[in-house]
Length: 255
Length: 255
Image 1 (cartoon, rainbow over the protein chains, first blue to last red):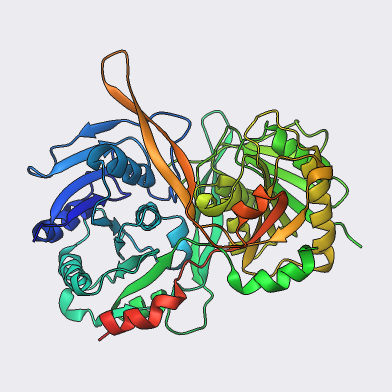
Image 2 (image 1 turned 90 degrees about the vertical axis):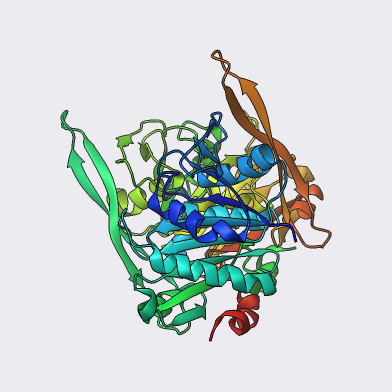
């Protein structure tokens, strides 16, 4: 049987430990091609580059595996990977391993997850992986085991079309991880603050900061499952229509 | 009755005709404060600026209305607007008028709509407006009438919490617009292509291009309604959980 073609990207940049760990984990699962940002692109969400051109350069960071660094966003990397590098759709798209969690509404800000969502929009089975540890030298050894388990499982149970998986891995040794839990994203969001400082000319500038608050009292959420030591899988869609509101709103607006 | 406080932003930048037209349309509806990008930010999706600081400068482009240009993305503008400029949540957040449609899956790439989605996440009634005309000198006169109609309607029928409205206006004179239609987003996406060129050093660079293809044979979509001359409203949510897949996937992954 022919090995699947796997496109790999991330948002922390091509030199991050996370993407190297992902490639190490999946080496035996298929033919790998990497197209990843040439610099950190965290927080870029689903941004694409339309007002300037993109650069694509060969990278030798992956010991003989075909790899390219790209000047654009994670979603740019997916598009360039499919339409310029591979010239066809890969069998699988994997994004990560992100340094830091992508739970709850953070999915919308996350370049890692936006790459996976873009894959789903292109009809490619896609997964974003995140480790709940923002350290640039985080320990990805448990993550690698989890990823192997997941890829083995999806051989028999393919990812449904129209969605991708958002997988978060708790910051625990493999022996302390309780299992895998399919959950919904929690209703949580940032209580933003700005750190206002003055530059050398006395003009203000602002750093975005804040606290992430869980406002979800319900069960079966990603935040709760991670706290309890589980790997979480949120099936993630790209249709933003709020179907439950359609009929009521028609009464207000349609003539 | 106290006038509502309205925060206005866009993604085409503070000097675009679209945002000026929006402000002209809503002048009588409330107290207006504008925080908009200092340059075009189309295609920035839900990107936020976390690796560099943000600048915020007073603007006198709006004849006495409090306005600021911001060095960041549309979502940065919303966050700075709420937490640094207003220091409280506005009663309404309006984004646009975008030069060009934001139908179907383009919602994910759109800075205009991501600003409205961010507003919804913050619990603020939020609307993104787009005119289906990419011309920088587009005619917004029909759009202004439509916006007044919409704002009058939502006085009696408040926007449900947890969603925002994605409103697209066809490129037609007001007399030829058939009405307003509440619809779902079409399942359509870009067939991307890259225009590969060579720079003066013989090195390649790539412009993202492509064709937008409608792959949705169903009824009641934004693309179909616009084609038929209707203003479209898609109630738009920010929870990406694919709830319909949860139970089945638990059988595969949960122990």
